[in-house]
Image (cartoon, rainbow, N blue to C red; front, side, top):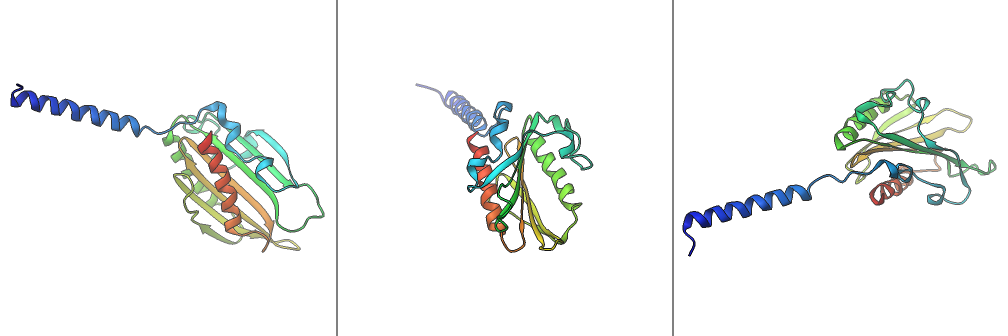
Length: 199
């Protein structure tokens, strides 16, 4: 028969094992560098008529002159970008241009710090009627803005940035004013987030 101290020691050991197991379960999921290309939208995610005009690794020009210009920030492991447009110039309604990008970091802290830099980039953006938007239920944390640019027909932009695991992602949507809503932009952002979750 076990003595009371033995029972206490056994209980303490079991409790310690449970705490270790729980900690192991809470380890953040990390996405590997070989999945980078899968973290952005593709032509198959969009309606017919869209084609990419650039697809590949991000280059210095993609962030030149912004708070995110250092390609080695926070141990960044790489970035991918795709830019798509409506391939038929006679189509003058609905989505016109989409940019989808992702950056990969060694851990979630790097992604969190990079999203802070996105805040600075969005805060320094200029445009007519600039407004902050708070995208709901997107990754671990999301931010965004919308604005218009003057033209014969004003152009509406939505730019959304978010973090998930060790990734930051962003989506920029461009359309003629009145043709695309925040809900439309969020729908595309959620498609990209689904790619991140399944990578």
